[in-house]
Image (cartoon, rainbow, N blue to C red):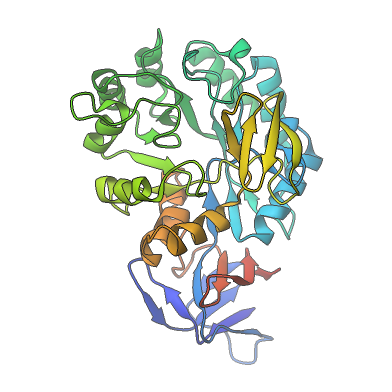
Amino acid sequence: MLRITGGQVFTGEAFEEKTLFVCDGRIVEDLADGADVEDIDARGCYVIPGLVDVHSHGAVGYDFCDGTHEAIDAICRYQASRGVTAYCPATMTYPEEKLAGIARCAAEHEDADDAAALVGINMEGPFISPNKVGAQNPAYVQCPDAGMFHRLQEAAGGLFKIVDIAPEEPGALDFVKEVHNEVRISIAHTTATYDQAHAAFEAGASHVTHLFNAMPPLAHREPGVIGAAADAKATPEIIADGVHIHPSAVRAAFKLFDDDHMIFVSDSMMATGLDDGEYSLGGQAVTVRGNRATLHDGTLAGSATDLMSCFKIAVRDMEIPLVSAVKAASVNPARAIGLGETRGNLNIGSVADMVVLDENLDLRTVVVRGRVL
């Protein structure tokens, strides 16, 4: 049992000083008299829900697409150490056979006590545009295929929470109409016009993968995916690592979409948590210098920054209000993948995932499912 006292606790729209109680991995109203209690003194600190990353590829030398339990365990332990308590990693563009193996491995995974919970999978490829592959492998790009998605979803035991599509590709709208009630559909790696994106949102899409990246820009006569997403009140991911997006564009996105829709993601790859050097992503060579990861032609290849670091950069360097940043890093991503009732908040009955941050937003304590790391 835990008792967290003296901290400024995130309440959903603000912070207030209050005491949190934890029993059997859940937040409870109070603890029984005489209970054996571990106290956490959070005076001078913020207490926020554990972060939820819905778009990340790896960390500490491992890629989720390695398709091994060793990789998932190592990545999820690293994520928890950085305050990410629920993890929905993204696949890359691969053939169905390779994706099926990754899905089966994820379905078999059992969460370790000191690791983030594997709560879903984000299928970033292969249903993307061959003209906006970014760091994806163009050899395996294909048109959206509902049958293939259903086979992979079965292999994953239902873990796929997000699937990405380029709405201008043949069969994309039929795909959206067929599966949007089963999985959250995100527009990604696309050359779509406003009208094409609008049609996809009308058909059931509701999410956007790494806003601004791998899509046409917002222009006053051609608003493209960004304009259509704003009109549809979609949930846009954004990589606030200080590399992918200019701070002004991040601030503009919060004004355009509001802080009840914005979602911070890390898009982190295997170099995250390690030194500069040569790595890989989706079978392609990646060079990492600082928090910049690029293919050898200079294309950005994910990030080398974890979600907690993105959260700090957004508040410290991009002037995103702390409450808005907590929503974007925890509340909104949890809600987007259907976990808003039990994760991404500090309500009575919710999973006891929480992070204690000092006044500089540095990590003091991480609690994962009621256990102090």
